[in-house]
Length: 128
Picture 1 (cartoon, rainbow, N blue to C red):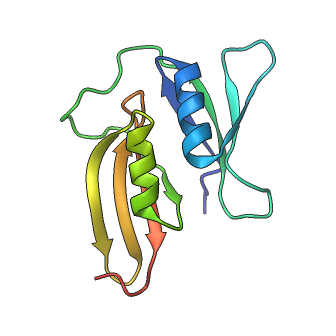
Picture 2 (cartoon, rainbow, N blue to C red; picture 1 turned 180 degrees about the vertical axis):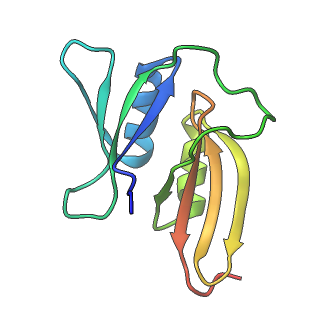
């Protein structure tokens, strides 16, 4: 099988995006050499998950209301309501309100400051 090992976020304003994800999820960003590319560390190496990269968007951003035409990454969170609320307070927008995924947990989708959609999942086997 082939596993996902890296993701990338494209941004009109990389500095604004770095601020958003640093404050929301505690991710760290390290510029790679003199390039307009930042490596993203999403957690400790001992935790499950992958790291990624951030780069300037080479074209127009996503248009509201259009279907998603990219992979959507979902982050684990202990409290989806609190994480969604914080995302909105940091300039993000609601893409899909919290819904139950029966026997799995609670899922919500938001847009970051660049219009990129991402998911937030709170594990809860009793979700209905």
